[in-house]
Image 1 (cartoon, rainbow, N blue to C red):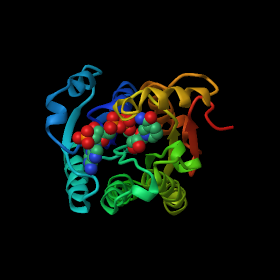
Image 2 (image 1 turned 90 degrees about the vertical axis):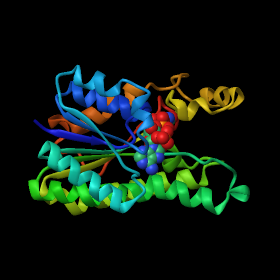
Image 3 (image 1 turned 180 degrees about the vertical axis):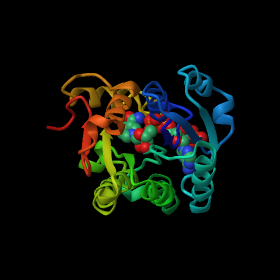
Image 4 (image 1 turned 90 degrees about the horizontal axis):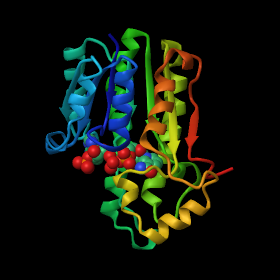
Length: 244
Ligand code: NAP
């Protein structure tokens, strides 16, 4: 049985990706920063109901040593690591002029350094296996920039550079690395926007609606599937036609 790690997967897009990959037949290693996130929901039970193995691992993905331990634990428990989805991400929005150094550093650590931490350790397992799929969560903010998200846009743009570099470095070992760049998806992250902000956003989306977490999970499922075996170093925007 193949195994998928999805970081930041107690809720939101990560939980939807985990459930979809379980439906695709992967054993699932869930992750989040706090135990409480798993105590308050039934994601583990939902995944097990698909007939696959599922366990959650508490680790702060911005912490190098935590990621090393987390990957070792997954390898010991499941035997292989076939898919890594670098999903964990946070926002600390504010205009550049008012952005604190702490809010810059925290977002870069959680969104960007985490991709280094996890890809380094899980990638090493995949290199020995000579196979693997890595999917990174970027954002339209990383492709096009977004006022009020200097830190977030920087981290999500960096993910694109890391995705292409990993694709080039690990391609000869049978490992693909791609990114998805969601637009506005209905999750706790976008629920924080004001009604006025939400209305303004809808006007620039060709499909005039927010995306769903399942619509992101479907594309990640494709990138992790045999059908995407010759797709690497790509960024797929999933935004309902936000930017054309
Ligand atoms: P979300 O609902 O906030 O879920 C993110 C999860 O990551 C949370 O459970 C969070 O736990 C966890 N997390 C945060 N910091 C972590 C850390 N240091 N280590 C481990 N886990 C951590 O976010 P989402 O909307 O599903 O977004 C998922 C990904 O998609 C993110 O990378 C985001 O940037 C990207 N994305 C989202 C949208 C959108 O519209 N929602 C658009 C474009 C891109 P806590 O709650 O305990 O912090």
